[in-house]
Image (cartoon, rainbow, N blue to C red):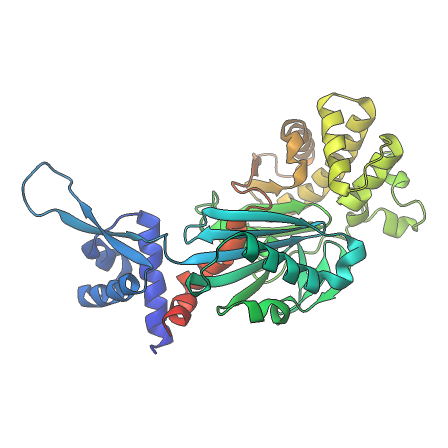
Length: 395
């Protein structure tokens, strides 16, 4: 057993070693602000418990004793990552650095959400039958949910925009002898991008994720505005940009029909696709793929749908940029299949209506695919950085 303070120091040392890939104990002491003797003790603990290793570095052709550096050991501890989205469950076994070892996809549907716990349990058991897993080497399990979880981080309350109840952690815990971390996918994406991703040095960024739901957060002065939640812009009233605004949910009253969530999320876009691009597809992702194909082909009705999407997104983003003076907008969505026409329209409409004309907004994409296991891995990484998972594995 050791103190929380010591665990924090272990996490700090591990993160520095990971950041620099190969570093000496002397440099670690300088960068961490810890005494050389403490660094020696901490690195020994990390080596003994397979988090880091020593590597010989011969920088010069001299015959002197080669220097010894420290690097992350990626080959002992493994990470078990589960991404639960409205129509799919993806399971990955990864190395400590997030590199995928094994991967399986499993299909689910809203009709079976009541049996979600049992189905995920079966998927995990199937994965373990197909692939050899040494459970004693699992550092943690990360469950990333494209939806919402409860405040205790024990159960799923929404999958996509559909309300459900899934006691996922208690259901799968008998299968594992390590911590199970349940997090919302959007929060993990923010964590991955702002701590180890492409926005690590950025200060003012709007994060926008568009799929079955609309998720937004703001990085302001280098800090997330909402650390444990998202900014709720679902109910922003949109202008009626075209007749398409009335075609989506004609049964709703105007005050509800023109809400942003009812104009640009995938359930809304799918209604436009079914009306203007008749098809026999059953799955929403197939319909979205069809729309993207038609846009690439410059099909007029598909381009009308694209204009509708960008009109509404640009209006919402314009208001956020005017408030927060954001320099970048990071966009994550399956609609990135049509990145060029999507970004061209968004950028033109944004800059046309900005109040702050001196702002030059960059639209950028995530360095991660929306369903990348690296996003789920980021929850485990954070547990290593704060020392909790290192402490748990040793104790």
